[in-house]
Image 1 (cartoon, rainbow, N blue to C red):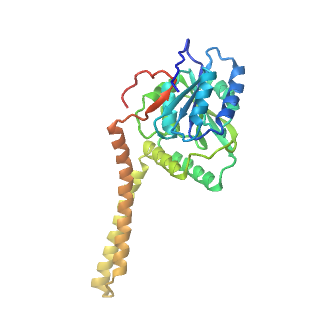
Image 2: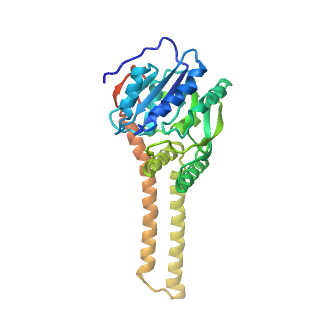
Image 3: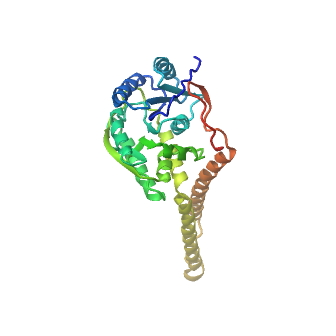
Length: 328
C-alpha cells in the first residue's frame, strides 16, 4: 500500500502516540474508544492518532492502513523490524505535530477515557501529567512484585525523581517534546528522560485494567533490558557499588592473610589445605566478574552512542519526514 500524506492546515492540538506490536485484537476497539473520547472535545486544531508498528507479525499494520484510508487523522509508521517499545514511542515523538502529546499503549490496559482529565491538568499550567497506577488487574504476582521492586530501587539510586508505579501513559506539552527530541541516547528510557527534563509535573491515579486481547510483548527479558537501560542511564550507583565491594573484599582478604600468618608462625596450628584456597579464589573471582560485568554494561551503552546509528528504520508511512534534528 502506497503511503498517503495528509498535510496539516494548522497546528494540531493533540497527537496520540500508540506503539503497536502484534495488537490486531485491540486496534479496532482502541480506535473506537479514542474517537468516542476525543471527538466530543471538539479541539479547534483537531487531533491525530499516530500508530507506530514495531515489526508486528500479525495483521496490525493492515488494520491501521485500512483505518488511515477512512480517517485522515490516522497516521502510521511501519518499522523495518522490531526496534522496541521505547524506540517506537521516540519515533512517534519525532513525527508528532500536536501542541500536546499523549502516549498510550494499544492493549487497552490504560483507559483512553482518562485523556480529557490529563489534558485538563495540562491546561492548569503543568508540562507533564502522568497516570499513576492505583491497582493492576490481570497481572501475575511475580510481575507485580518485580515491577514494584524495580520502581522503588530505581527511585532510591537515581539522582532524579522518577515517579513510582507509572508507565509511559501520560500527556506532555510541546516544550517537553522538543526537549526529548534533543536527547541523543540510543538506550531509551522515556519516563526517566521526562523526569530529568523537569518542569512542573503532576499525576492522576487510576485503576489499570487487564489486557483486552492478545499477548503482551513485554517479556521478562525485555523488562530486564528496560530496567538496565533505566538504571545505567540515570545512576552511577552500580559503578560505585563495584568499587566499594572491591575495597570490602580486599579488606577481608587482608584480614584472612593476617590470620593465616598468625596461625602459621604464632599458634603453629596451621593446616594447609585446598578448601580455604578454593573459597577465596572463587569469592574473589565472583566479585571481579560482577564488577567487570557492571562496567561492561556502561561501556556497551557508550559504544552504541558512539556508533551513531539511526534509532529506527521506517519501511512505510503516511507521515511527512520530520524536521531535521541534531545528529543522534
